Each structure stands twice: as structure tokens, then as C-alpha cells.
Amino acid sequence: MHRMRPMAMIVLLLLFLLFGWVIIASEPEERINRACAPVLWGGNVVTSITSMFSESAAYRVEDAVLDVHYGCRYTVWRLFYAEDEQN
Image (tube, rainbow, N blue to C red; front, side):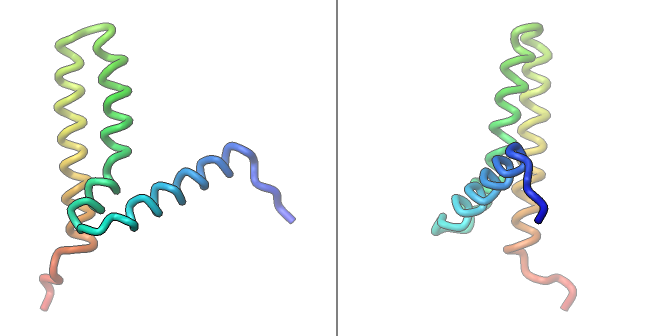
């Protein structure tokens, strides 16, 4: 039997925890926000690192992260909550 590497098991566990955290939300908007939360988490890390070197670049990175977060939220909404437009 194939054994998983420890790092793969950790990543898989984190994905399951994220999935469970998203599913237990009672409102659709909250599920969408939770599904896209990792975008903001990663963006905050990148923005913080960037701000150590250039404050103006950090603002551009933050704007880009917010754009990606909006795209994530829109994509999740279209996938799960938008009505089928091909009637």
C-alpha cells in the first residue's frame, strides 16, 4: 500500500478543514467569503512582506489581492448560486 508523505497529509488535512469550515456556514454569502478567505490570507502575507521593501508597491499588491478576491467570490457565486442562464 502506498504511504502518503507527511507534508501531503498535512495539506490534505488543511483542505478538509477548510471545506468543513466553508460548509458549516449557514448563509450563502458567508460560505462564499469563507471559500475565498485563503486568497486574503495569502495576500496579507505577500502585502506585509512587500511593505518591508516598498510602501507604494505594497498598495499595488493589496489592490491586486482585492481584485483576485473579488474574482474568487464571483467565480464561486457563479458556480454554486447563479441560476442557469442556458434555459
